[in-house]
Amino acid sequence: MRKSLTLICLFCCFLYMARSTVYAQAQAKAPQECSPAMLDVSALPTPPTSTIGGHVFVLRLQNISPVACLLAGRTVTLVPASNTNNQPRYVGTAAESQPQLIEPGTWAHLFFVWTSRAGPELSCDLYSGIHLDMTFKPLRNVPDIEIRNLWIRACGPLGVTGYRPGEYIEATPIPQDWLDWYGPGGARDFTFSLPTTDDEIASSSPLLSLSAQAKRTMLGDRLFSLRLDFPRLESGGCAFSQLRKRESDGSTVIDLQQCDNAALEKGIGAPAVPPHHEAGVMGLFMSDGNLGFMPEHTGAFEYDVIAPINWGGGKKPAPQYARARVDLIARDPSLPSQVAVLDPLPACTPAQLRIDSLPPLVSTPLKTLRAYNATNISTQPCSLAGVPRVTEPGQARRCRCVCCSCGNSLVVGICSTGQGAWPEGKVLGEPTQAVGNAETLEVIALLQVVAGVVGCHPM
Image (cartoon, rainbow, N blue to C red; front, side, top):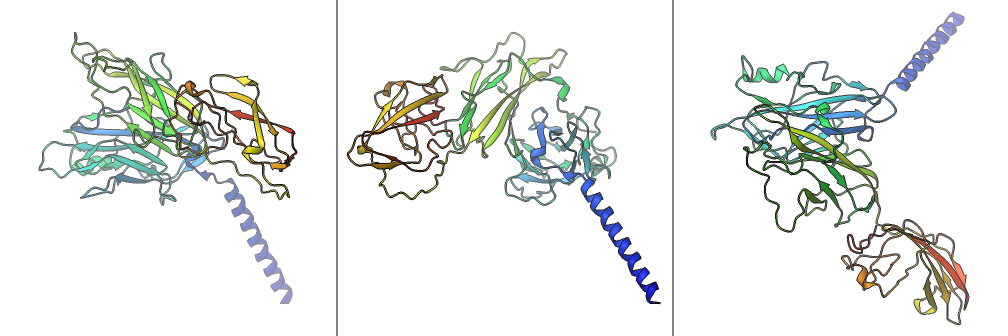
């Protein structure tokens, strides 16, 4: 009897271990959920959504990571909150509501659909934009995807589909369960304005370009801007259809411009250029007082713009679009921290040192590598460590000071007030160095400054 019990126990233990092994292997093989950093999210250009009729807005998602991942959830928030209803209607087939596996380099899409009807007696909800999170329960206050200036007037439910595999095409059906809300025949009284598909958008065009003065910027740089060169078409529309920002963590903001994209009558030229402006050139200032499109995370980030560059043929000419992109790097403006080093010598004071500037080792419009000699001219030794503060006076005419109150760690006097730039890292990372009288210590600083472009702003 005891032997039988022992065999039964061993058999049960074997089954438990085998089940645990299989479960662990299954967990190891199961793909992870897609995070914003693994995806590149963009939108397709859409006709103005403020018009009467049916509207479709499409988001595209590409897996840019080296591994497959699951699009497992979505949480959509309509902003600002409406008086009558703030919940979208999740629509689509049962298969679309299931997690979708997306392989590296492949695409998926989802779209939003609503109708706008005339008549003040109709109960319609007004929204300016959409927040989309990649999970059912958002883990942070900032949405993964933000769509601005969508100008939604939803007279009826605003439907959002699940993730559909592949690229969006014009033959993609509008969800039947959303159409059924309008009763028999669906929304047959509405003409739907469909987005322009991706294969109709030129990946580059000599008529459209997006550029920055430098490839690096500081977080919080209120002067940060881009230059947009665009063709001035014979219409009263906008310079671009949409502007997109993708941060280093994958969070994406898409800003739409609601433009009148109807061509003017023949014989009417392009609108006059405003005084003091260069035709077909726009400065896109990103600060909160302007577009509110500043980078919020350090690391590599990108902007891209989609804009009309020409008109197609036919009785109702449609705009032809192109895309332009610029890749940048955002840096932390905080001063580099230094390790505290105990030293019996007192720290050097400005009165004890003479700083001599040597000729630049490297000098380009955007980068300068300089060396400085620090000489103790006093009779007492002192210690020198950390990030030095060096000033070069006498070059006030090179640019104007636009941020004279900014804190500095390394000041290069390209302004009369001594405004300068932050270094790329620790200038002196070594322990405290004792400097005797009449002793010279060489200090090398690598700076990146923009002189005469944005004033004396730190880069």
